[in-house]
Length: 115
Image (cartoon, rainbow, N blue to C red; front, top):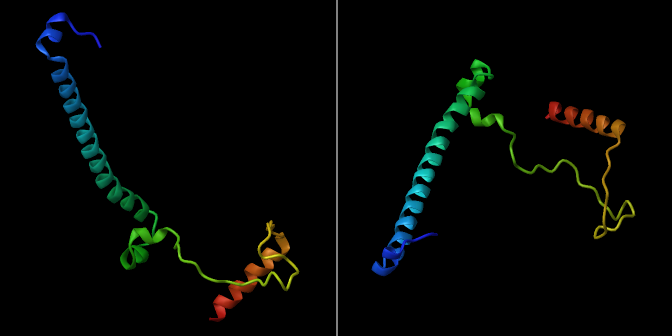
C-alpha cells in the first residue's frame, strides 16, 4: 500500500482501511445474492429439463425429483461371517464373481416379482 504524506498526517489510512472493508463486505453481499438468484433460477430449470425426458403419466403422478435414486437402506441379505470362518473384526476384501452376481440378480427379481 502506498500512501502519500498528507494521508499519514491527517490520519486517513485507517479510514481507507475501513472503506476497503466496507467495499469487500458489499462485494461479498452482492456475490451471495447473485449465488442465491442462480440457485433459485437453476432448480426449476433443471426440473423442466428432467421432466422433458419423462412420460406424461410419470409427470402427472410424481415430481421430477423422484428420478433420483432413493437413499434408504434395504436389507437384502445378511451374511454370517463366523459361519464362513471369517473374522468379523478383521480386514475384508469383497470381490464380485460375475456368474454368482447374475444368479443373485435373477433370484432377487423372482422374489420381487412374486411379492
